[in-house]
Length: 131
Image (tube, rainbow, N blue to C red; front, top):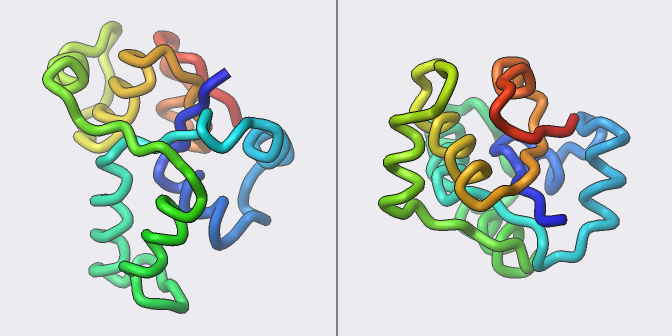
């Protein structure tokens, strides 16, 4: 099974694992590295959080990204026209946050299980989620 980490799940998996549920910790650990992914928008969300002071990393944010992506073997799924269109046409109604819409559309387009703590996403019936 290939998994998609929501932005907070990805960040916490590298810096604050105590915030992850036991289910998510186990799933990340047992899933092969090349079967773990993030949506490219998560990189932008991380950069915005650092810029706004919402998260603090102990090393240069660029180095943090290198460690959290390149050195970990994590796949980054780029925004494609198909994902962009899906994000604008999610079935059943979904809130307006563009990053969440892109992450959900990425999971739906690639038939991935999304690891998230976000209650709105967990309650969305058109997606497989785990927390």
